[in-house]
Length: 381
Length: 96
Image (cartoon, helix red, strand yellow):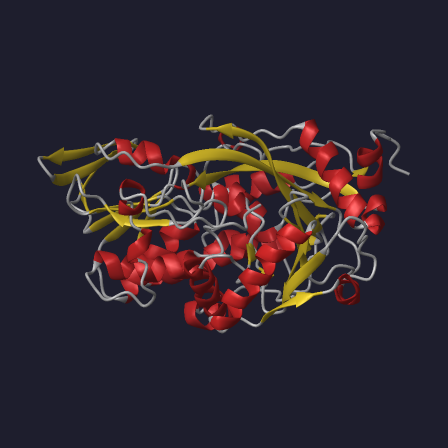
């Protein structure tokens, strides 16, 4: 029989960051339950970019907090490896004047929050990526402090640091039910037996909706397959993450030399299908080589898929449940769970311990969907 | 084995037997995690060369029979294809 003060469901970056922050604040006896291996869901499948260039104040604040955190994360987490935070900037491309109008508003908002982004002409964009094909583009924005990380080592840094603080990880252990008595949770039933606890954090990524249903909570999240590919390593040719919402692409060269690129696909909802498609390879290759012609010669090594866990307004859900006591959700990251993880870890630990928020994320509770107070993020791939 | 010995196991990503044993001894005994932290089986051959050796090492370290250590997922395309060929709708299987 196992007892835990807090059970966290999901051994990805969100669960590990929440566990680390809770343990750092002195919570003992935290158990993280993961169905497969560490980060088997979206964390190991994501593009691992980090940007501060957003269209809503809250996303800007979460991005800025996480950027500052990741700059110092190896020290903070005392990690033996390298999280490979390459701050080559994000170059975000607009295809139309209308899109550019939105981008100008975004940059004004970002600047007002201390994020040093800027609007660029196409000539200025070509100074950053000289071979960029600007045909059909209207302009760009750029923030040099944006970047990307190695998602595997970044996750491992949180896991190793939290383990040293006493957090237990139960890998290859699937949650199959949550027991409760009235409004109180009594235990989490897993494939390896029951863990007795009264506090549960749902950080299950693509499965947040199913986990919430186990305690009768209707979480308005849906999961959607997205695909991504990686090329052979080549010499450094691409400094920033290049991204376009209208062309449906994000691409970056990681320090290893390989180039990663992804796009949203068939909008297949809630099937949990993580298989790759040929349609993706062809569409991705067309978009990428049109925008960045020298990529034509580079070979694709692998492609894979992962799931976004979408919220109705594409903003995270940080929320306690109303229907049951001590059930907390960190869900609906809409493709940004990895980059926001430092903020997720801190804010969720503050919510669970009843502390004042470092960034006021009270508007990110599920209440916004009932009260129709959506905070719609306009800039998402 | 001498400290100076260097046995390359993963030729795509240049990972040695010594590095693999070092990670296993640190407690990284899940093949999927070794793949992601060391990049073994992530390169061009996707593990054709190294996986059987790494699985044997894991079996020795953990006592699990080789038959119970599942290989990593083999992902498409099976042969590296230039992005330009994919974009043009031509697939060239010649690796030259």
